[in-house]
Length: 74
Image (cartoon, one colour):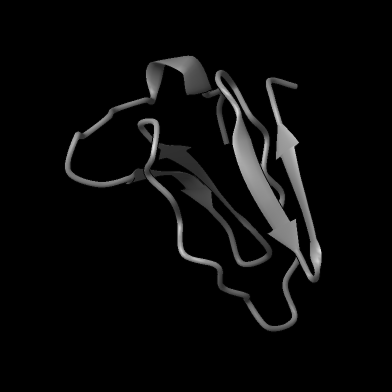
């Protein structure tokens, strides 16, 4: 596996959220989600999996169970 500059792997659409797969192995996958203000990813789960989100720029609202928080870069 090599190195990936996630800041160069961004694309946006006024129509809907964009999802770009950076890599995938048997144990994990890494995607970049690009959202314009007002766009959202539908709440969902992956049974038996742990999901990790990292905000590069802007901010997003995240829900885990009953808890909702707004997070920014980092």
